[in-house]
Amino acid sequence: MTETTLDTPSHRWWNSRALSRFMRHRLAIIGTAMLLLLTLACFAGPHLLAYDELFIDLRARFSPPLTGDHYLGTDPMGRDITARLLVAGQTSLLVGFFAMILSTLIGTVIGVVAGYYGGRVNAALMRFVDAFLAFPSIFLLLALAAFINPSPVMITVIIAVTSWMEIARIVEAEVKSLRERDFVMAGRMLGLSNTHIMFRELLPNMVGPIIVAATLTVARAILLEAYISFLGYGIQPPLPSWGNMLNGAQQYLDSAPWLAIVPGITITIAVTSFNFIGDGLRDAFDVRSEPT
Amino acid sequence: MARYLLKRLGQSIVLLIIVSMIGFFMLHLTPGGPLSQYALTPGMTQETIDRIAEQMGLNRPLPVQYLDWVWRLVQGDWGESYRDNQPVLSVIGRHLFATLLLMGSSTAISIGIGTWIGIRGATHRYSAFDYVATVGAMVALSIPTFWFGLVGIYIFSLELGWLPAGNMYEIGNGSFLDYLHHLIMPSVVLALVNIAIWSRYMRTATLDVINQDFVKTARAKGVSERRVLMKHVVGNALLPMITLAGMQLPNLLSGALVTETVFTWPGMGRLFLDSLGYNDYPVVMGLLMFSAILVLLGNLIADLISAAIDPRIRLS
Image (cartoon, rainbow over all chains, first blue to last red; front, side, top):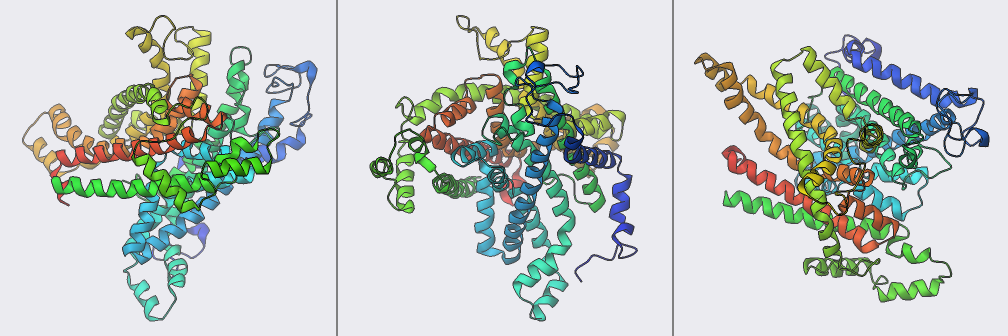
């Protein structure tokens, strides 16, 4: 009952139509490959480098990429950019990943409850969603970030707190369309609790749209971290993140443009990968393309 | 129309109330809160902080503080800036024009280019152009706006020297052309993401319209392809874009904040960041509320325009 088995030739997930459609999506495959490479580089790479992300090479300050033994050059303090970029990637990817988990949880619970109960509960919760959407997310994020202790955990939490609304809306719409179906009626007649029907019967039918939205949320979370860290209110040095590596880059734009170019391209590659994968998943799960 | 207007107005007011609650409670419940400015001052004892809290009325129960704050907000008393004791509303007012100028010109660019790409993508579906536009939009949505700005400054200001790297006008100049010269780069940078969004939605909307019966009828009557496109398709496809413009307002404001920071543009975004730096709590709170009100107002206007054009919306 909990799985849509009609369109799958077998119960094995690797035989599923969704997977084969995903594999035929060229951009999604490119995105997956880029992301795997990037993750591998960020988590395994730092162990293979000659310098760690905090080592200060005073004689090689401001060295441009591909000179000496610093592959991507050094920053104004003489720290190796390759090492910093990879360690920063760990921070940024983890913040993005956990912000996605948290915001998907919040959004799913609110969406399911709003959609299932309908009526006043729905009206109240969905107005709450609308109100959150009225704030420009960066304003809200910065205001929160400025008043808290900006540890990576807190940054993750506030990014999640400002990005769950999309998922709540998607889930609410799905639940609304499903809640009058026969299997829900059957569940009620069997005397299953509302919680059981909501999370064990209804939720498994919306895995597709949720996964698609969650993938795009990672992309968004990585960008948001970059924005607030660039502005100085996100992840704090000496812990590097892709955003805070760009923090001081503007003042050296003339003399050391690579300080800005290298992390920026990396962020773009990471976010593009997630957007490509999200697009592929959307086709694979056959989710209607642009929500209106 | 009057009924629709009243209904939408009522909804906006309810939303505004919830927005004010979220804004107030979020900032007051975060550790530190309005007193964080004083807590960091050296030599500050807990007693002094408690006294300041009492003077500012921060020791009262939160709901009481909230009601007091809302009541003063409604009367136009948004508090005074900690920095120069100016009323918050007039401080915001002085920065409003620059932001609206930036957002306006950037929206004009993104609507112009975005709709063109979208329509062409839909009429030449699965062509090389469509493919490049699709992939290009996804990449454009992945580029951090501020970084695109930095690259722009590097290329067009530092290397080529064609455009200024920041500010809204040259001191002592300030002519129309001078403003325009300074406006080009920030508005193009801010437009990039929106071009991507507009082109995607316009493509979908055009495809929706292109297969409808009235378009087929027009074609069958022998109306030229160009006329069908311009008169029947584009007009109808543009209608949902009005609502989209309203929905995109929060993102546009967020983007403007970041763009203004990179280009030292003297708008609301820069003001917000400067105020954060000074822990200027009333201005931060004021800007947060002001931007949310601006968004709600924008959405309301967008919906009213759509309803005025399309009777189906106001009657449903």
